[in-house]
Length: 301
Image (cartoon, rainbow, N blue to C red):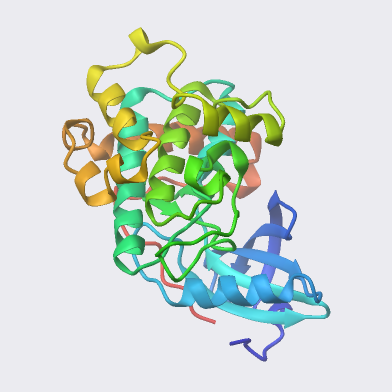
């Protein structure tokens, strides 16, 4: 699984673009001048099982709307996971930088691509278990990628482990009565509210209060319903059904008018705006928009 070569001889680290509990993410350049993302994870007894599981999961999937895994290396006490670079960053970073939610057409365009990725995962009997704006990335061709498979599960049926981020968790996950792939659909619904309003519902509450709110009360809804189209509100309602059996799956949601009636290429307006701002913030590391939907440049060691 681990490439024996020294990664510092193959890649040049350019800039840190992310930092989390499990490690750091950097923009890096390969020796053939291709830009990639490298996640470095300290190798400990605690991190080894989760890191190994994430790498195996990423190697087992291949879809336009899931983040591509290239290779991994060991350097000192770190594992370097090399992945495709998504130049626009995460949807969460876009929301944080703008300080407001996205336009509805962009939310619909992003959601359609996330649903394609989820449909693929669910048909492969896999659950992501941590769908949220921080784990949805966009590249310079406007292709949306589901990322961060550290909490994903291979067996899509009747899981009971409480894993994920509490604000986005489904009621059946929080009350530990067992859940399946429909838990990802609830998380997607919460992510829609997050994309519309910048934060998920109950973001001002602690995790215990969130559990009580989600399990004991009706599903959360948009704060300003009149601001949004009936098709959006209908779609959201199909995602945020407390009973999993009443929640639509990814394939059915892809057929809803809110998804089918949006021009998916409109996302390029958002991409151009993001990349323009990135260029002004850091001219040394600027990216150009690519043709909508085009594949990332191939990487090779």
